[in-house]
Length: 143
Image 1: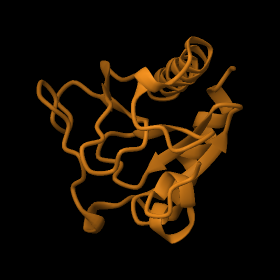
Image 2: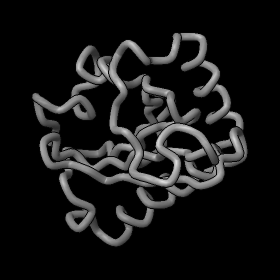
Image 3: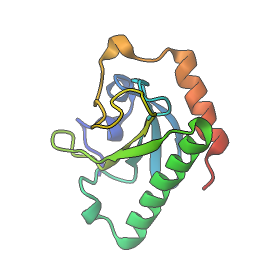
């Protein structure tokens, strides 16, 4: 069941506040995070229903979702060659299963520590920059 107050369930303006839908897989929505302090940063959100926890998925659903997370990380790695990739699965207030996939670059933003959740709208990438990230994700994504 979709939830009314969830940006991942409802899309539209709610999601547009922080991200842009890049593409969908059978299991997930891949969303480019507007804050691109870490070039290539995106979110992989579970799409079938409003599921809060990975533990609530069947083994098959979990495996498909985590494959999407890994495949998106591989696409980021091929496109941008980060030093490492960080993964964040937070949901204290939002409560929809999603992973932040955050490439980290040596000497770059928050290298050596926890990534900054959101630097604020004044630091959002331009539409052209977001479209470039989307194009690169699609180019290198292999399901």
